[in-house]
Image (cartoon, rainbow, N blue to C red; front, side, top):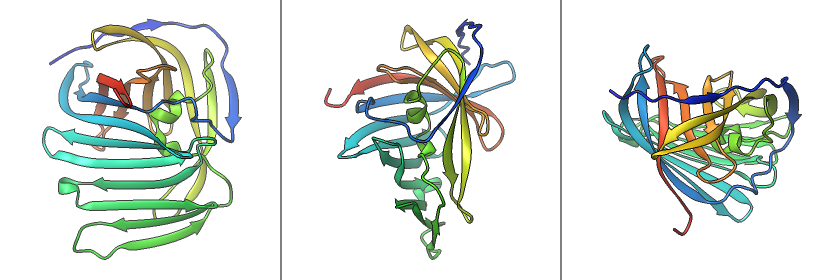
Length: 240
């Protein structure tokens, strides 16, 4: 088992709060990164559980992010592509294959705040399709860490975005990101200073930077309740 130690830079500034109605993704360059992810026990020791790739490309007016995850137990069990408008981070589409042998499919598409969702539980089950008209323009919070790295960082602050939840009942709901300051993260043999950004509703935390490598660490709870920690192992800019 491995144990990673982080150096914390404590900040004593007051917390500010702001609500954003759009987020520019124009400052994010295309890249490809790989991560190892670990299960964390009560002593914060880490046991490797798998790896994943994170790839961002620019396609005309869209920023497109694809994550492919491979666990030690199940092989590749998730391929998820999320696309949003670069200028505003408004959603365009989500395409997700998941489960053992990638047998389940979820697809969603936005058109003028109209959300169409298609869900296929397995190859033997008919597709379920649902269309909802959302009352307001929203931000694609499913970009997760990529969205976190595009936020306007300041010492310690709370940023609220208007996001959405899909499923049987599509809803518009506020989503908060708390910028907790900076930490030094030891990855790839380097000590990199990163902003620590926490999402209270989901208990996801991202350690992100404003230059490559943008995202160096992620932590989040698994469905079983175990905390998973991902650490970057390599990265490259598009074309390298």
